[in-house]
Image (cartoon, rainbow, N blue to C red):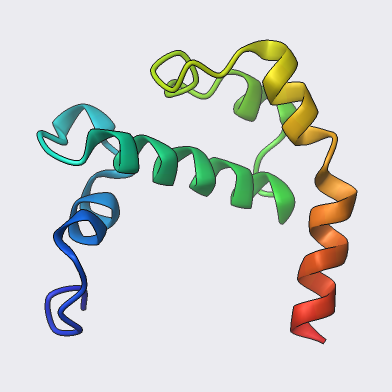
Length: 88
């Protein structure tokens, strides 16, 4: 789909490797961010718990520290409100 839609190469890599970040040879930062975003989206819809997010394997590679992760997770309510606003 990414090829058919002629999306940028970085998008191809992010889609292809977000579940297996170690295999990404290019666009590693984008792949790591996409992997973490996938984890956060699963947490927001209830498919993952806080432990899964707090132990996400890409956190060290992205230099996200526990206090920064906690600050992000504390924004859950605001994120849910924003999602509700654009989906209703």
